[in-house]
Length: 363
Image (cartoon, rainbow, N blue to C red; front, side, top):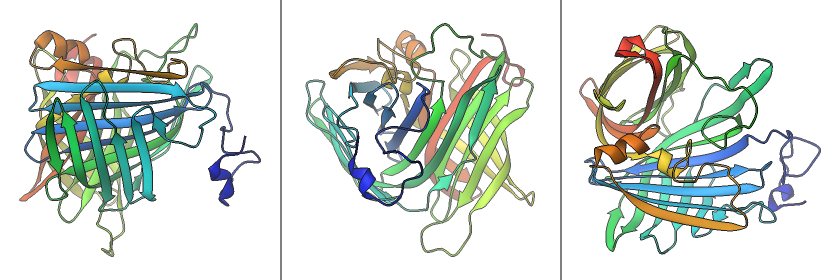
C-alpha cells in the first residue's frame, strides 16, 4: 500500500512505507515528550506508539498537577488504512520542522484533559548508541533512539482550569525510538522471558543555559553496565562538537517504602576521562504505567482494541496505596545543579530485584 511517505526519495528497502522489513510483532516506533515548569506545578508526559505488525497505533497523556492528582487519557485505533496519519481519536501529532519543531494536541473530550502545544528544539538531537540484545538465541532488542531538549508554548486544560505555557518557563525533553523492543508492551505468549535477578535502568535528558546532556544506562545487580550511552551537546549555532560519554557513574537515594528517588548524582565520563557531575532534585513526576507502559487498568501498549477505543481517569497520588500500585516507570522532572549552574530536565529510574548497592536483596 502506498502512503504519502513514498513520494519522498528516501526509501531504504525495495518495498513501501506502509510496513517494516521484519515480521516481529514487537516492532515499535514511539515518540514521547515531557513538559514541565521549573517549580513543580505541572508535569505532562504524552506519547504515541505505532506497531505495524499488530496493526495498532495508540496514544496517551499523563498530567500531574501540584504533585497530587494525575489526569490520564489513553486511546487506540486500527493503524491501517490511515498508516501515515499520527492521529488517534482526539490526539494529534504534526512535525512542523523536522528535528526542530513539533505541534501536538489533545482535543476536548469527556475525560477533562486537553491541550494544544508546540515544541521548539534549542539544541541538536542526540542519537544514542544502538541497543541490541539476544536472549537464548532470539533477538529481543534491536532499536535506535534520539533525544532532544527544547522549550514549549501553548495551553493545557484540566477539570476546567488552564495552564498557560511559555518558552521562558516551560522545559521540554523528548525522544523518538524505533525497532524491536519486547519490554513495556503486550507480553509475548508461551515463550521464555528474561527475568534478571536484579538491575538498574536510568535515562535522563537535561538542559542548562549553554549546554545539554543525556544518558541511558542499564546495570546488572553486580555493578556491570550492559549499556552506557550518553553525550554533552550545545545549542544551535554554537561551533562545538558533541562530546560522547563512555561511562556513567551514579549515586541515588531512594524512598524507604517505594523505589522512587529522593536525590541523585550522576557523573558523565568522556573518552578523555573528563568528568561532568550533575545533581538531581525532584520537582514533579508522571507515572507512566497509567499511560500503558507494562500495563495498567486493562491498557498496555500495542494491545488490539479494535477500530477505535479510548478511556480516561484520575489518580490521587497522595494515596500511598494508589502510588504504590501505579509507580514503576516514572518520569520525574528535576532541578539540576552542575557547579554553580542550574538547569532542568527529566529522569527515569527503575531498580528491580536485588541491587545490594542500594539496599535491595530481592523482589
